[in-house]
Image (cartoon, rainbow, N blue to C red):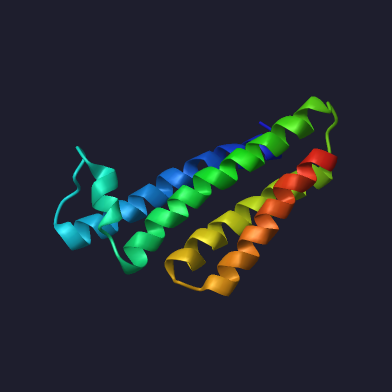
Length: 126
């Protein structure tokens, strides 16, 4: 599997990992996880728990843009070390984004978002 596709797989798993973090906060606050109405329970979270849920939602949104970039890159039919670097930097930016989002470090979160989005868009032009 190519580096770019490996990064796509990792990126697809990041929102799931963040959902587990959100579940941890749900369990801490409510003592259980309401699997029948999880979105309602998520909406009741505050602080780091609410930010974990928001980070998960943002991870799904970022994945859509990255996936489009990977598809555009793949349709060009050329292998590129630059694309691999962009994909790796995207993964790093998205991991950092989730961590600093939950930690409430808004300036770093914005920087990680910009870097990740820039990598996604750059894949269209590699």
